[in-house]
Length: 168
Image (cartoon, rainbow, N blue to C red; front, side):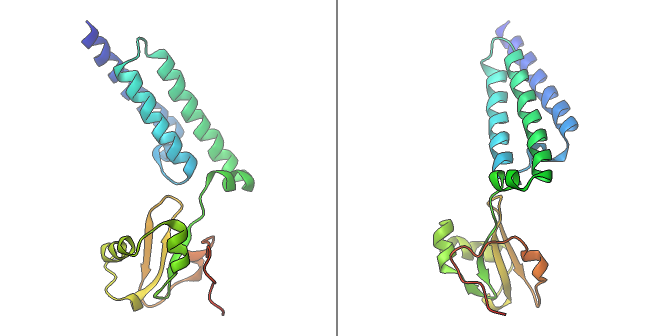
C-alpha cells in the first residue's frame, strides 16, 4: 500500500510541475540568474521530498506553488526595477579580450587556464588571435566569441572586473 502512495505522489508531483511550468512559462527552469538557479534547486528538493518521504502531498504542492509564484513575482520586479535585477543577477565577466587573457579576472572568477583552454577548444577557437572575447556569463556558462569582428553591443553590461578595459 505504501508503494502505491509513493507512485501516486510521484505522478501528482510530475503533473503539478508540468501545470506550474505551463502557467509560469519558459523561464520556469532557466538558469538566467542566481535567483533562478536557487529556485530550481529548491523545487528539485521539494519534489524529491514530496515523492519519497511525505505522508501527504499537500505541503509539497503548496511549497512548489509558492516557489513558482515567487519566481513569477521576482521576474516581474526584475523587468521593472533595476535594484531587483542587481540583487538577483550576477554580472558577466570578461576573461579574454582580443586574444589577451585577463589574468586578474581569471583569478577573480577562480577559472583556471586549463579550464579556459578547454572552453576555447569546445568553441573550436583554433588560435588565440581569432578569439575576440571570452565571457563568464551570469549563469556560469562561458561564451567564446571568435571570428573577424566583434559587435561591441554584444559586450554591453559585461564587467571588466579587475582588468583595465582597452583604450579607444
